[in-house]
Image: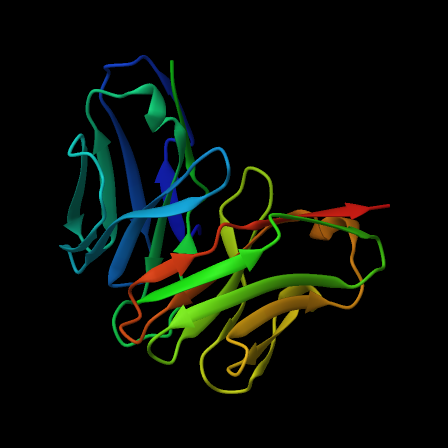
Length: 114
Length: 113
């Protein structure tokens, strides 16, 4: 069983469209994250949820809206897609507070905006 | 606040040679430190982590890293590079809360046959 799974793996869409990426973890972790990896491989934290509550919200356009229906799921919805949104988006989870648990990553969702 | 700096965005080594990837950290509290590897078109996978126990940490695939507080470093080494080691390597730091992770900019390792 995949520990952190995200779907879809690839998205190709036009500017202005809306898209969602889903993430699920079966590790029993309390904290989930979205990271964005650009073409230079830089990894940037976007959001973090702990037990369904938002704890990290970096400077991300409000076109990006995370939703956590339960602690095992963290979805990412993106409105009005722009060319600069093209990237690989990684979902990750960790056991949360009380460290030093590591991050477990999904395989990534490659978004291409045309 | 925590941060890490990876020196050298690209490192090339010959097959069988020593691999040395550099990471320096900045932290106002005792850090937890990690090395991750990313193979092409894959997610990140943990190589090893330092959690304030032994300063020399052994990881998977023959990699190890040494925590040096005096140098604020956590360099990754492998005695003998293999072609399959070619990948992107990331150093990361987290603080005591355990739910904030900060990544370096990555080092791309090329192994020359």
